[in-house]
Length: 206
Image 1 (cartoon, helix red, strand yellow):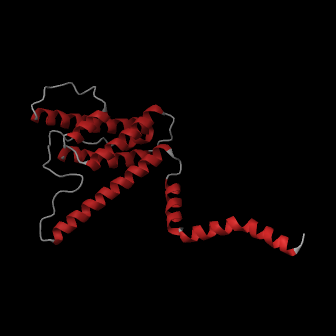
Image 2: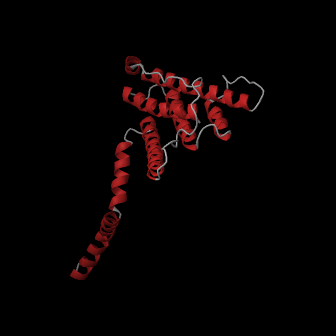
Image 3: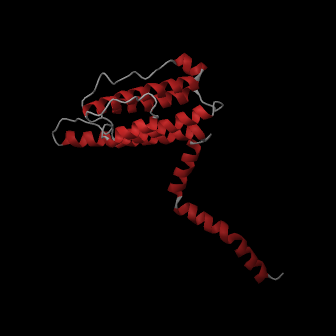
C-alpha cells in the first residue's frame, strides 16, 4: 500500500468521528441538557413521569411568579397565580394524606390514598359546578378520574396547567396500579404528594 492510499483510507476512517466531534462542539449546550435529562430520568417509568410532572409544575409556578412580579411592578396588588385564580371553596378542599410511616412501609398504598383524596375533591368540585348550572344530579363516584378532570376543564372550573398536571398524576397512578412490583419509594410518594397538593389548590380555587 502506497502513502497516497494509506492517507486516503485514514481520512475515510476519521471522517465520521471528526464530523461527530464538530457537531458535539457546535451543539454542546443541547447535548449537556440531554445528558442531564437522561441522568434525571434514570430508572424510567414512574420516576421519569414524576420528573416530567415536576418540570411542568416548576414552569407553571415560574410563570405565575413572573406574572405576580409584573403586576406588582405596575403598582397593583399581586393576586391570582396560574394555578389558582378565584375564591377558594372550603367545602371542596380536602387534605392530601401524609403519613410518613405508611409511605415507607407501603408506598404504593400511600400513593393511591393521595390519588383518591384528589379525585374525591375533583368530584366534589364537579358536583358544585353542575349544581350551579342547574344540571340534573348524577352519580359521580363511578366516573373515571380522566373524565372528571376533563369535564372540569371544559367547564372552565380548572385551569389548563391544573388539568395537565392532573392527567400526569393519573398516568402515574395507573402505572403504579398496574405494576405493583414497581420500585416505588417513599421519596417518590412525597414528590407525587407535592404535585397533588398544587392540583388540589387549583381544584379548590378554579
